[in-house]
Image 1 (cartoon, rainbow, N blue to C red):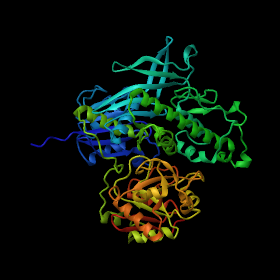
Image 2: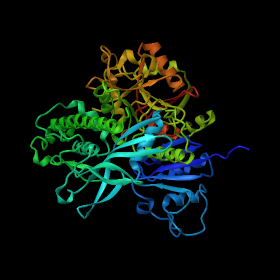
Image 3: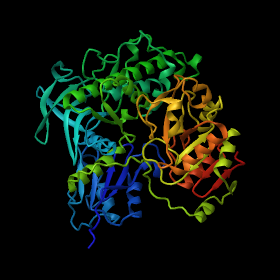
Image 4: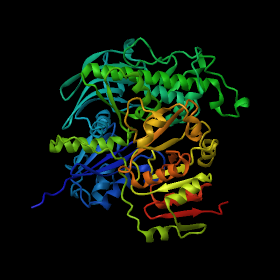
Length: 603
């Protein structure tokens, strides 16, 4: 008699919300809510929960990941009193129907509050392929932690953590930085302590009224004119800046732990931080007539972005070294929002090259990754399974299961034509300076386009970056990535000891003589964020890049996310057609079907 499968659905509730569905410990799908709702950074993964019904009509457990308990933050369903997530799962029939009106106590709903950083750790650890590791979490503001200091109540948030990770589900905190919004009573700004315990286990901690590493980055991002959550723009701007002695140090360089300069960066937990520019003449530089309201043209913004990038990444190196010293483990996994910083990720390889430290950076380092971490942690704890996860695929979106008839039906609209096409036809379009979008299979989990929801271009055109940025409605300084045949990568780029870079998590240096060959995807500092591609990882994409190489001699293709500025990546074919009809992009390639969709005659 076959064993009944165990279905576990985990949800991340906050911004970058989403759902991960497991069947007997294997990921069935994982997706961010914004891909379905079409609202960037959307919270409340209701559409994603409905998607579970495509795979099963019942789940055994609903595991909830967030920084606060369900009963404190989730709204209630009228009459029943259920929190909105339990209520939705019940109404969809995914969990057992309840006849009473009690709330927050459904036996199938597991609330993993107060574990935000551990869930980041779990996602990174289980996907790293390591059998044992230490995690370094560098995050904005994780779990809300009320503390009593000098007999006064202070609200704090977990900021940076060092967590010892082992199978099946052992995650022991060794060190944590707690950030506070207001100055700590009694004038204490940081304090090593053994007063904070988890399940009876003690760990060292610092309580700090300084901005954490990510909050410093958010403050500078706002200072440059954007929302604090758009930190990727600051990363793109930083190489336009330079070292500038007029900018005060952002961190206490003598401290072995991250302690930022409160005179420069003022925290506003949990909602970002601000640059205290008013007290520094250089930082207060504003000349809107000269910049036409584009603050990124000011040296103050460019140089501050440079200072922020270089100093924050050095602080993370300190944390990594501390993690190794605390645990004796030289396999380190990195997650939390700062894990998406491709420049910093490459910096670690150089800074740590002689120390025997092996680093894995989680591609789904944003809060959406906590859904996967929660699902896998619960599974391994439930089953006490010590089997090391080997797969690292990110093609984890829901199945679309399109047929050729579906393709024809969905593209039969005004101004849209569909024709047969081969890889050679697409290469010809690219070399004639056309943008071609690529849509196939399951969408990529995380923020990177890896050849299933991508916008492609010929990287050899000198003005390609400006051209595509204009079409996508992005800022002039935003760089683009490249996808390269894995077997050729070392001829083109210096991976600093890595064999490959399949998830586009590193902005790497070119080998000599390469930059002039692919100017469209080389940033002003001579780097390129790359994705190595093998035929096993993505057969259709690999064959297309190989066809491009055969035509041009170039092993790399210009790749950026299939979206317009400010929009989520496309998820469905309908999203893809809408994006073409809303832009100057004409071509959509469907390699699984050998079809080319053309959208023309747009006003």
